[in-house]
Image 1: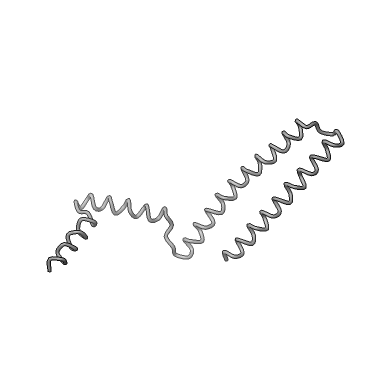
Image 2 (image 1 turned 60 degrees about the horizontal axis):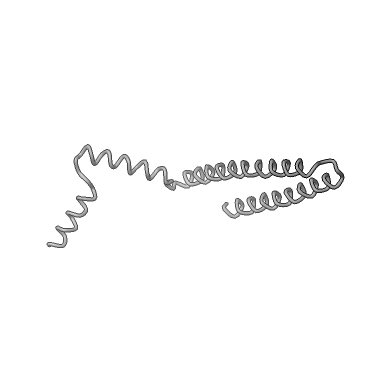
Length: 114
């Protein structure tokens, strides 16, 4: 599945680069025909780049969410899952007045003595 995602990403990236180049060429032609001023062309290009950057952020977030979903479906724990479990363990340790790390150290010392 990841090979399909990689190929899809590369396809999208290629389309974006090609689209940007064609867009820049079209804006350059409009300037040469005096249909746009240099300042207007710069503004149009800046807006195009800004929009592309915001879309990249959206794509990154969607990709991250998709990876989390795939990890859950595969039965893998996410970083958030692990952090949640650590927090729950800490709460339980506090309630019991015991630290599993301390117990592990004590057991290791006892084993060394035996």
